[in-house]
Image: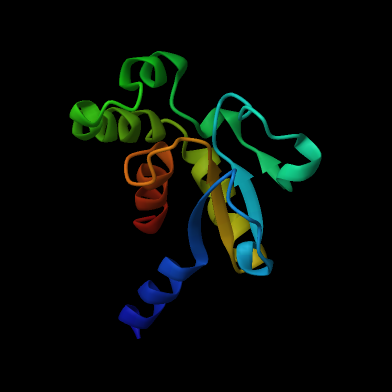
Amino acid sequence: MIINMFLNRLIMIQLKRIYDRTSDDDGCRVLIDRLWPRGVSKDNAKIDLWMKEIAPSTELRKWFHHDPDKWTEFQQLYKDELSNKKDLIDQLLKLEKENSNLTLIYSAKDRERNQGMVLKEVLRIQ
């Protein structure tokens, strides 16, 4: 039963680049970038909520600059920042429950090393 609940939770939170197509199973779409993505109109983005405050701080974002060599350290530093944003984490978990699906939207080119990966991991363990 616990394993089944965990597996269901994995399916309910997904990640997408803002440039990916939307789909019916996206559920609530939350943009988790501090800056609005280039080349995307707000009308076409189909974003339900823009949660700028959950994004990495400007200093952390600029330091990381999507450098793969900094990925491990970035993950820990961002988790440290998220530990001070419990109210925002709770808000995302509430949105997930209310909408069955939650899609975290980011703009980074790297699909494997971005703030969405870290935030999804943090949401899973809550």
